[in-house]
Amino acid sequence: MPDLDLRPLSLGEILDRTFTIYRRNFLLFVGIIAIPQLMVLAFNLGQTFIKGSSFPKVASIGSGALLVILGIAGIVVYVVAYLFAHGGTVYAVSDLYLGRPTSIGASLRRMRGQAGTLLGVSLLNGLATFAGLILLIIPGIYIACRLATCIPAALLENLGPRESLERSFTLTKDNAGRSFVIYLLYLSILYGLLLLCAFPFLIAIGLSAKNPGMLKVWVAFSQFGTSLATVLVTPIFTIATTVFYYDLRVRKEAFDLQMMMNPNEALAPAPTALPSMLS
Image 1 (cartoon, rainbow, N blue to C red):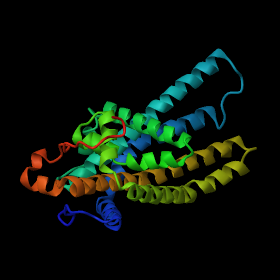
Image 2 (image 1 turned 90 degrees about the vertical axis):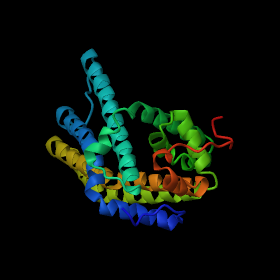
Image 3 (image 1 turned 180 degrees about the horizontal axis):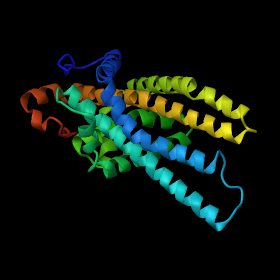
Image 4 (image 1 turned 30 degrees about the horizontal axis):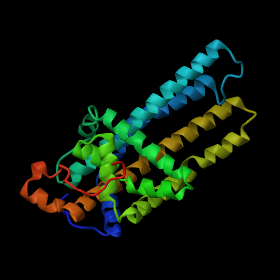
């Protein structure tokens, strides 16, 4: 994508490039998200039509074990889908942004050796944000904004979980406001599309409480709508944070000059003496 040159960007330019990349490579990003999301949808539909819309009412050893197995399986499915969808998207954005060819399969395959690292980054990120939310909400929002680039940093610089959070905290210094706008835009689009794709079926579920057969059908449609919204909107946030990551490196580390002089080593993290969040 030759028109996406490496230079410092305003917030408006970051968002414009986000939607430009997404629009020009729509099938690529939808495919990266849709393949893992199909596992989630299949699992949810299986639960809906096997168990119905409610858990077994009779407490027994068998039903309790089934609930535990389904719960564990659900967690595994959701985690795997999340890791491959977000990680694959980061790799695809990076390749496109730096003018390299990529594909759905190539982007997802690169996640095979990185899933454990990305899981650690996501857990540590979630714990840090949750700890901040306990402190009257605002600190949690601030921490989430400062850690917005930890996943691109982890994958593109081969950093561990703690190092990735520290790296993001360093890069986003004085830029938390731009992270906040990215989060706000993403959540606004996501909940707007969920309202359009899933909410009508939730109303139908409420009206079909006395008809178990139709209840399952409406639950299934709501799951389709939720999956559709997830597939369409998730790339926006991941593309935006990856473009934001590169913009911060251009601004603070002259990443554009590094690429010109030595493209093979440009992705290595620049040494810094700045204090980090976890040091």
